[in-house]
Length: 111
Image 1 (cartoon, rainbow, N blue to C red):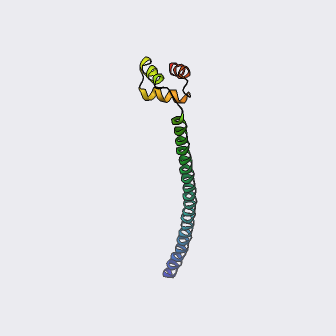
Image 2 (spheres, rainbow, N blue to C red):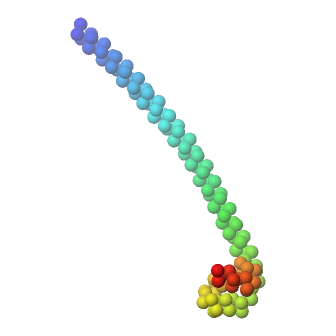
Image 3 (cartoon, rainbow, N blue to C red):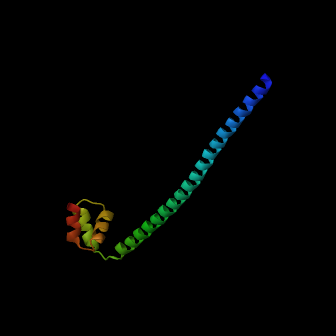
């Protein structure tokens, strides 16, 4: 009888083990599904960021084209660069940003 009891106890333990394993597998499966959903969200977010970055680059290109189209006087660039002791590129950029208005560019630089 002892052998039968031991066998019965082993079966109970085995069924408890199976239940625990089943619960553990369910939890694992749920986590995998959550991870898959999270990875989809991450992919969507990355695509959104990439699209936003591309839009920013296009806006910067357009801004640079607009600034390049502004006509400026080379003498104004020289005066601003020399008097304010600035690099010519900084003086030229500031002058373009102020549509060639030397006074507005100088005021901006002196702030």
